[in-house]
Length: 438
Image 1 (tube, rainbow, N blue to C red):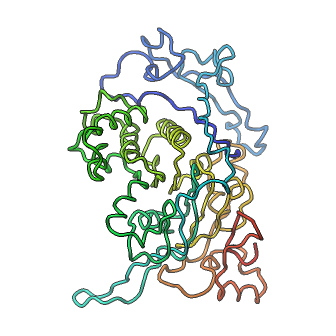
Image 2: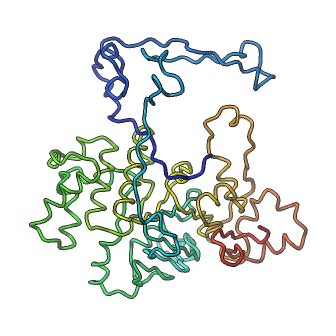
Image 3: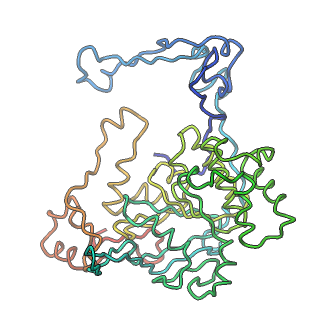
């Protein structure tokens, strides 16, 4: 894996074709930057362009499997070498968006959102007719972090670790929140109803499913204008603002009267981003913003998020399962396990020098696009039972799944079982880990 240099990804323009009445020619030609006239008249056959001798890297390869055949269905495959034709890249890398805020040291940037000792529990109910509470589910258990201007903090972990619950607690702005949440320096639980309503414009959310997040009965104009109407923006300026946002996210303002069903998945997500930006927020909460999109479309949306962050100095609080996306887009990463943060720090430090065994297990599951490395590398496989989220007794919740737990001395095992590890990293350190022995 490479270091995160925030270089833009290379998107494939256009959309996949509809598989009905396909025209003659190469089906990829409308999206291909090097297509020629012949590409539009006849579909190319799949032809062998190279063979790979596996015995060089895999001496134990069975007979008959010594060669891997590399085939391609492209009229110009013989001209493409190393992703280039005549020394020019087939898919040029877009320029990196300029950003003054990213050149500013983190300590000198304003804190846009701060979370201190956040706890969220859900009641565990028993009984069909006479319901009674018999316990609590600790979905988020005493977590703290902050996000600075122009920064992306990603929250990662297994399903059920509390990632989305954390976002929803922040978005709720409730008086009943256990812990403290500050947005742009304001303590949310102390605000009046009118103040909370006004403060909502500073934090907006982009959802995982772009189609499910957009009302199919509304036009694009109605969808983007909805938060502006709700928060009382002047009506005479709303149409101009909607057109501005359409241009900002790369959509044609001429399509403002169309319904969501007329757009592709990537375009619908751009509509959702435009709606989130309508109120000029300082923070965007991104809940799996590209997981529902084709890989060819993801790059364009990720590049858009980077461009918007550079231009508007936005802060992103991202929840994602795809750690490759997290590595590319993030500045810092917080790893959640059963509602608690077990490791947090700079993205390169967490990915390249992970210290918690749970983080190491997550990272070992990332696919590597090199067959030789992928076949030979070792993975960390977690065994043992997952502790119950209803158990809030002292002790390390990861101890039962730690591969080397049984090799520890008896005194150290007792400490793991009965003493909850705190986040630590040394004086002044930004890379923190919740483990007694790391």
